[in-house]
Image 1 (tube, rainbow, N blue to C red):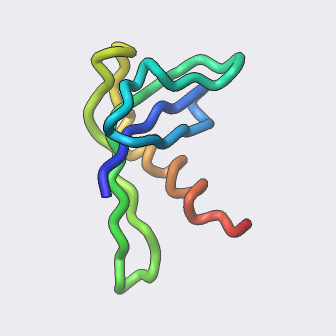
Image 2: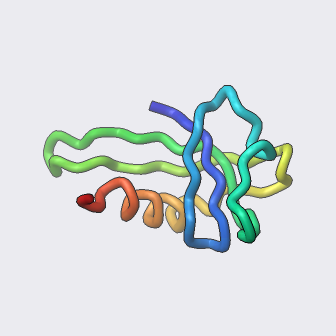
Length: 81
């Protein structure tokens, strides 16, 4: 599954539909620091989700930080609530 994301203050990811422009997403008081596309892939062998971040946001003029963003997002999606 491919979605868009914006990372705020290098720590807080917001993940949303590819139908929505990056510049329509905000997080009160925080600055967008990277943005792009995120792909979630289930790894049967590891029994966990792999996260791949790539690309850029033209509307925000920000690029993905690749593995750095992917590691942060993976931490959020792998956390037990």
